[in-house]
Image (cartoon, rainbow, N blue to C red; front, side, top):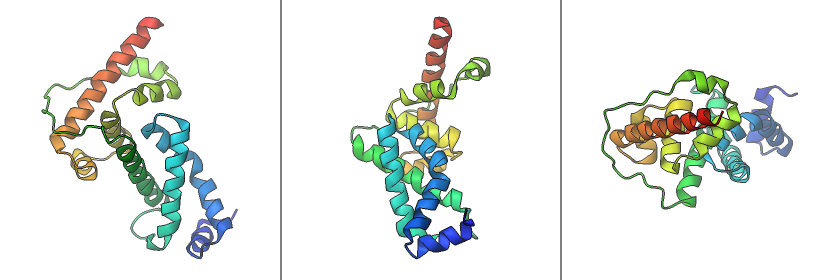
Length: 180
């Protein structure tokens, strides 16, 4: 396998084999990221491919001193996920919602017994706006301030969506426990 620096240099020159190599290097991690934001695998692959088109188009803007290539690619793919959801579902509501002071705790024991795919299915059942905020905050590690700027909502609305996601996930997990 070529070293990553050689692959990047090839991508900057528009070399298709280097682009394919970069795609293969990050495919698994980026498709998993896309799966968390989309409702099915077909949409996830569409978003992933759009993300890589942008990666290849803007690879000359990548600055190794500012971030790792993985972080740079991940950021582009996250933005593509958000763009996809906003275009696909113009009715996704990010309206300003009241800030709820109550927080919801999800017990770790039932989650530890679940398979990753089961948890992913629960997350996919959340309303899209709530799912996006949950993914950005819990999985990607964005702050409410960053989320607010990224998807053009207030910090309070971001907090509300996170609280709502936790409440709904807690309910889904409890219902799953009853079935077991």
